[in-house]
Length: 388
Image (cartoon, rainbow, N blue to C red; front, side):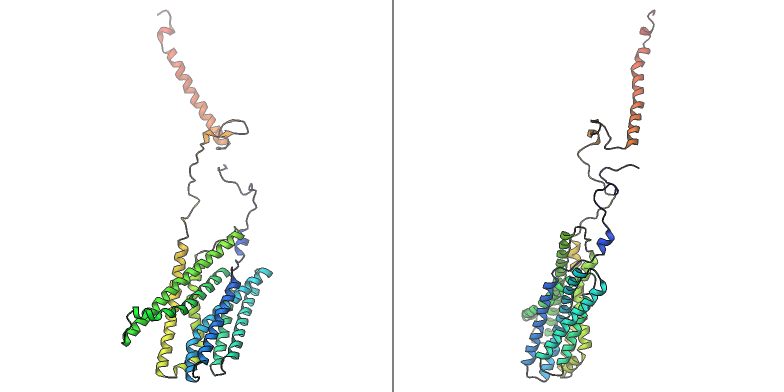
């Protein structure tokens, strides 16, 4: 068996072999989880405060019920993200202290979500008016935080961190986008007729969903890229994240929005029914808002996933295989020198069999040369016989 130049056998390598199974089985931590937890808790507190201000400034009664139903989706989405962020930060601490233990990590994630849900429920009961809707908001918010914590107990911590980052950025964008609704209504031709208002509202909603999906995909891709580079600096043998992680991270904010809608329609059903029963206009508004939220979640899901995959695909280079021929080097084999025997040769380029074959070829080629030199002397008759 011959040795190929440029390759070192595994047995002769000075570096220890890497256990690929153990290196790939260790879960990667989610960088910046503590900062994400603080930001998500701050956003939840802001949503709870704005909902309280809206309900307490109303004239109480039917108006407070309607405003509570309108504000419930924002509170539930914020609680879902906050529970996941706190659970992710707690999972990082547990993994750093006790190692990769799936049961402990999931239990810690559930515990983190329960802490957020309990704190939010207590804050709602202490600061909101004691009405029939207060307990509904508190219980639904606590359930959303616990569900978010359970989701953060997954093994792919960087992907969960990317989902939380993108979802938090999407929620902040939706609130900031409300400042641009009026100019967009005028841009899309909203007039005095009901039909023009409905058409303009559809285009405004689609524009919001499209931009939110693109933002979610870019934020998810940016977070995963940062996590991959940080893990590579700490351990160069860390396996790179593949495309399913980017697909999940890009689609995650849309999935969270759809999950929040499910929680709202199950846990907050009584509040939505009370708001719809106030008047026919309120019933139409609640139905329209519910449909709009579902459409927004679907748009963010698909646009975010597509944006993250496109961004990831642009970072990929051409695939390299073992069949690719190496580039020709500037040093030919004939110019190499056998350093052991201090003479030119082919010992570094060929094995023993190739050398023997080359020597045999020189011997065979030497015999015709001798015959050609002797033939002209024997073929001249004048020189062969002096008597003629």
